[in-house]
Image (cartoon, rainbow, N blue to C red):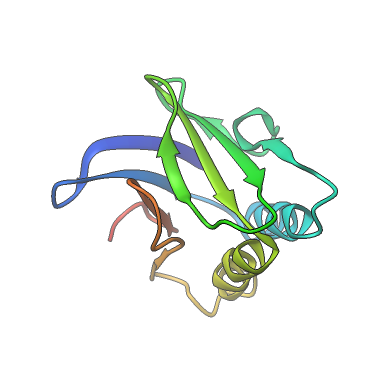
Length: 127
């Protein structure tokens, strides 16, 4: 599973992209989103997981917020924060589920609607 940032990704909007993943890796991503939804984990370094390969030092922090869904925002040159409430994290988990069993093979999902930066899950990196 690879994680990168594309400054001119989707039209004029910047883009965080997760791509080239196995079913097991997307299962771990799904579990991370579910873990965030319980509120017991307030901050999770996705980029530090052994099943993630970062490109160009891209760092993505997952953050739990009790009430606000902020999506992905830039917090440094190559550092990004994805902030959601319980409901928001459950929504992201739902959007990853079809990739676990191959129902979305060859397709992609936009994971967020909020925030300044688009968030894409794509098996081959395309959209």
